[in-house]
Length: 248
Image (cartoon, rainbow, N blue to C red; front, side, top):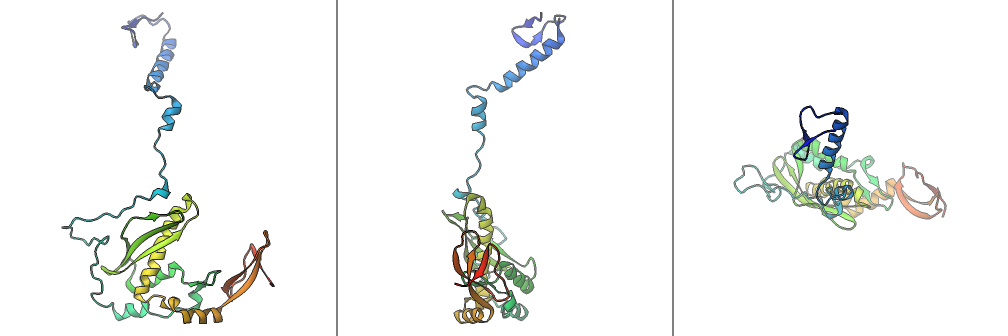
């Protein structure tokens, strides 16, 4: 039989371990009990007190960092540095103001014409060079019940060019990060208006002419629900599954 010193399970008198293996197992059980015996907490309560996952619908906690007044770099979260200070070079202007190619323009089912956001980035890269322009957030992301919105500033060659607020709808908390990226692209598109990029897409006469020459409206039927509706698409596109073109 093992004799304990002062009632402590880890202290025994020398020579008193008649069954060392049994003592080791018992000692390990005692240590596990000591580690798990937190006052007032059961295993279920311990797991329930684990840090809760962040609810993205309450915000992304991405407030911009404001620089000190004496900072040597420009605080793009608040500054309007370089706005309208001088025109860009003739080479950059030619790229920014170049007419759009009809093949670059897409049509949404509701008849809205648009330029894919990646093509705005390509135009800016050609005009200023990769790394010579960027989007600076001017505030934190605001998340409503159905949309994400945030204000951005377009900076090119170290100068503020434009400020615009982007927005993007979302359909569930798990889609908020994707919507935040779409919000940024939407702000970029709006900022590019001040540079004259894709200005045709804001001209009603150009839109009507483009739809007449390059787009068509057709009736389609959903192959599962059998519901019918009218959609727009480019003349060189085809109706895609789950819809099929029908005569109304």
